[in-house]
Length: 168
Ligand code: NI
Image 1 (cartoon, rainbow, N blue to C red):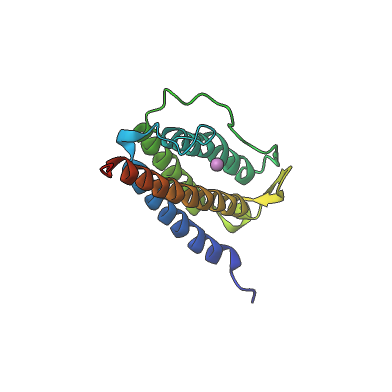
Image 2: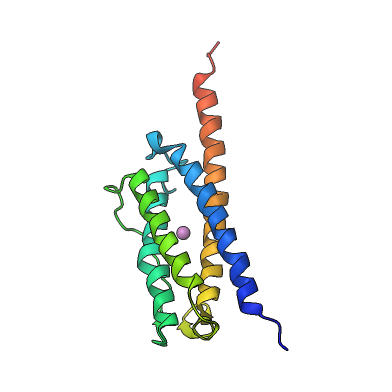
């Protein structure tokens, strides 16, 4: 009898993503009142990051995972939303929509049969890709942003410290 690899992977990936969702949401919510702050001009603001995550989830991951599972044998370009104007996206709204998209994704993926989970699409960067592979890519993406957010919060704290220190 073969080992049921797919369910195990699913059982690891979704809780890991739930964890990063909670962490990222918490960090971003903590700076909602200062959402346009950025460490330097060329760096994204908190507002932009929240909107970027929401757009990636709603327009890319959710859509693509459904296409793969449906057996559409889709071909994907690398998705990005670099240079998009997110200045109208309120951080808290982005987070609500992001978490909602994710909840839909998890619900969708948990209901997939092993056969659907084994279907693939073809990605220009990642090659042959299953639903769970895509979710693993999404998890890596979360972790990159989590690391960046932690750095941002540290430099913001250092900056505030400098501003508050009496000069004498
Ligand atoms: Ni990103």
